[in-house]
Image 1 (spheres, rainbow, N blue to C red):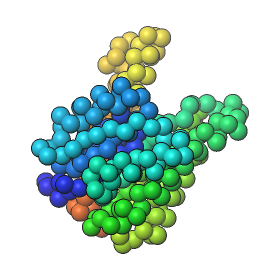
Image 2: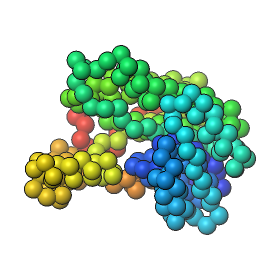
Image 3: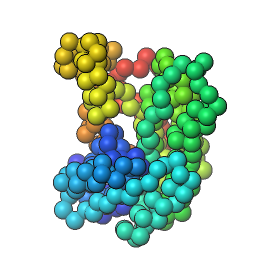
Image 4: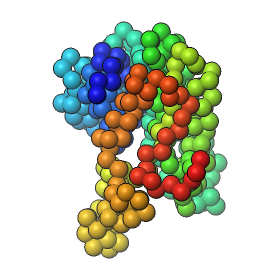
Length: 265
């Protein structure tokens, strides 16, 4: 299926690994010029090389290293995309999760750090991107959140509470920015990302799992489809939501979880 976005320009934040990288890869495979972002320059360079391998001929892939909690990061990333590609059609926001801990162990600093990482990084980047997205014939914003927005998980109070703010923002922008810009959110469940694989490897070392494969099976035990999510397929969903093929989808928060969530909303 041709998503009709070849030649467009996209910025994907926190895309040096995991689901952000998978999203950048899927966009590049559709012929979209993409700016990737990460804090670690070496890991970002490796991600850029990987995404370039998947890119359709003619698509340009570049990296821009910056910490998303830097108040100037959003402006810098958008400026780089516009300088490289002459405009911006699609923004995909992502960010790593805050540390896992119960409420009684969190400090004020923990809450401010989580809000800055998960919410303000998105606010600042969208603010910088908005005028350029309006100039596009089909500007889109896709925010990568978490299934925790629908179902809270023990010891993830920071993620449970703060990520909801991004979905509220996305829903509001789907109205404020319409009809020029569509805004949607995706809420991933457990996918086989490097972060999840590391946790499984740690579990094998500490005796929680008998083997790596047993650990993967355990992580998928609550998923009705019986397997972890595939980051490549996740990225393809993000590309779809960034394309005219989903032109009547806006203001949605789409779970991508293999049926894991028991929520009816």
